[in-house]
Structures are given as structure tokens and as C-alpha cells.
Length: 223
Length: 142
Image 1 (cartoon, rainbow over the protein chains, first blue to last red):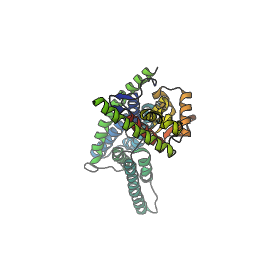
Image 2: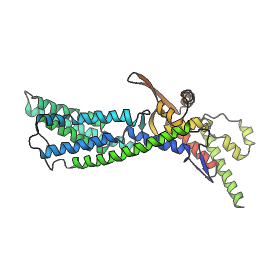
Image 3: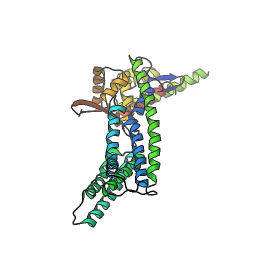
Image 4: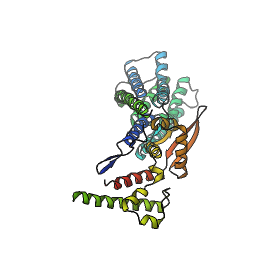
């Protein structure tokens, strides 16, 4: 990088940090986005799964057991793949945690608390209705997903778009285990969030490839 | 004539920067080792402003480290090493100085079984970097 070169550009009467320092700052900021707000291929997968889950639920009246289990496992597959991509691919040069604004943090907390309130209500309603049991496996799976939803939102759905898509995916998975599904016209925000997530994910991945080139050229100029 | 006016404006700005750095030093924020006040008073204003820059931040490697840390909540050692081109020893030594000044915090943790080190800039470190930028900008008459 040439730290002994000019680190601060002085252009005429104005001092700018557009030189090597500006480049360092910009690269760090761009790379840090892939710790939280940019999912890249993880977002593409999440969006695609949301669209598939929505279409199957809406258009297939009686999905087979295999299809039900596949869709029931979709949120777990998505979360596992996106977190692996994040740590092993997008942040493979070392973890850099994105600096998030207070508003972003408050929104995330608010969405988590909202989800927790809804989850408690749904679990209480279902348990009260089926009491004293016995609870079949489908109902237990449904309750497990609904109860786990606030934790999943807190840990893995940190942007509003991920929240919209992820909560639908988890809810559809819970319904699939219980033998139901969302019908056509229900949850119309889900396919929209899915499409937006796919498009954004592709754009973010292309941005990451540019970032990789910039990081390589930075390392090249350092050696 | 215009040049003269610009010089005067530059000196005034540099004087302001020096005053700001001195004020910070007085408040115990800067870790600058400067000359005694009487000696400093005899120097030209611009020179005093240059000498008044926070030397802890002014050093190129530390400036690069602080610049990277200011852009994220937490930065792993490996990324800092790759992006700055500094050696492991250099980073450790500079970060130790920044940590001693309260500009940086260090967190050691395990990623699986691998020991890992991450750094964060503190509010004092962020303020020092901002002040340094402002002082330098004022110094060149921006």
C-alpha cells in the first residue's frame, strides 16, 4: 500500500482524505457491509426459497410428504448456507463487523420484540386449544418453529428485507409441518420480498467481486 | 497580494488548529509530547500548529490503523494486516500504543480452536482522529 507514500492528499488549499487513507476507509466500509447488511448469494438463495415456498403453498393443493419436509427445512437450510457464505466466503479475509446506526439497531430490536409478542400469542392459543393433548408431531414441529422465531429473527434476520422474507419462510415451514400452508393471496409481501432479495443479492455479489479486485490491487501495490 | 492574503488566512487557520490541539492536550485527550510552553510560544504560528498535531495519530501506520477501525464496529487482525500491508509485529506494537492512549480496545477470542484478535476504535480514538483531520485541514488552509 505504500504507507511511506503520501497518505493524505493535499490538493491546493484543501486537505482531503481521498488518497490511500480514503481508499482504506472505503474498502473497509464496503467489506464490512458483508457482515450484516449485504448477504450476496445468501440473499439470492433466501429470495429464491421464499418464492418457491410461496408458489408451492399457493398452487399445490396437497403437497407430498417429501415436499412438505423439504419446505419445512427451507429456513434452516437458508440460515446455514447464508451464515457459511458470510464467514467462509464474503468475510474470508477476517471478520469486520459493520458499524450500524442506532436507528437500525432499534428497528431490529423492535422487529424482534414484535415477533416475540406474536409468537407468545400464537403458542398460547394453539396450546390452549389442543390442551390437554395429545400433541401430534406436526403440532409439536409447528410450535417449535413459532417459539424459535424471535431467536431466529434476532440472530439471523438483521435487515427489514431479511425479516420480511425470513419470517414468511419460517411461518410457511411451521404450517407445512402442521399440514397446512398459506394460500394464494395470503402474505402478498412475501413473493415481493423474495424477488427484491434475489435482485439485491445479485447486485451485492457483483459488488463483492469488484471489492475483491480492489483488495487484490491494494495488496499488489503493498508488496 | 492574493498570495499574502491566503498566507494570512492559512496562518490563522493553523493557529486555530494549534489552539484546538493544545486545548485537547490540556483536557488530557491527546498523548502528545510537545515542547515547553515558553519555547513553543517563540516559534512561528504555523510551526507550532504542525508540532501541535497529535503525534500518536500522525504516525502513518497508526493513522492507517485508526482509519480502518473508524469504518467498522470491530475489525479482525487478519483484515487489518492484509489491508494495511503492515507486519504482525508492527500492528501489535502500534495497537499497543493506541490502546495505552485509550484510542483502541483489543478483544482476544477463539474462532473454533483458533485464537483470534479483534480491534475496535473507542469514542476517544474517533474524536482524536476527527480532531487530527480537522487540524491538518486547517493547517493547509482548507
